[in-house]
Each structure stands twice: as C-alpha cells, then as structure tokens.
Length: 71
Image (cartoon, rainbow, N blue to C red; front, side):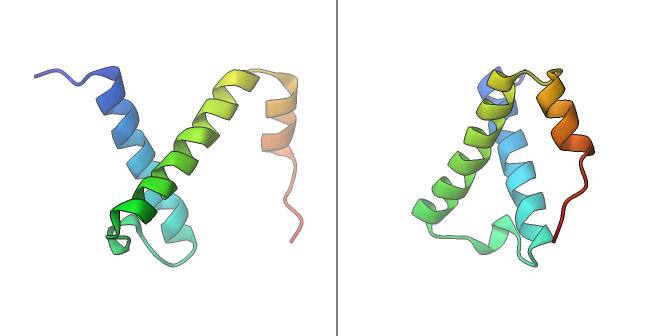
C-alpha cells in the first residue's frame, strides 16, 4: 500500500515534532494526552505551511537559515 501525501506529511510532522521536543530534553512519546499531542503536531504543520508559502528558495529564507542565532 503506497503512502498518500497526507500520510507522508503526518509522518514528517511527527518526526519533526519529536526532533524539536528532543532538542528541549523531551520527546513526542512523552505527550500522551491527545489534545496536547494534536496541538504540537498542528504547530509543526503551521510551521511547514508558513515556510512553504514563503517559498523555500526565497532570499529571506536563505538569509534566515544562514544567520547565526543570538542567545
């Protein structure tokens, strides 16, 4: 059975959410409440959507990716 685009996107959102949470010392598997888990995955999809709409090859995107982060 081939994955549909929505299946692929759902898996990608889970993978990226897990990577973000692991960077903060946690992981998606620790979020078992469905509402919280859905909110996390929605935030990742919103981030993807914003990047897509801005255009991944735009100068603003390239500049933002190559600018060092100040802490």
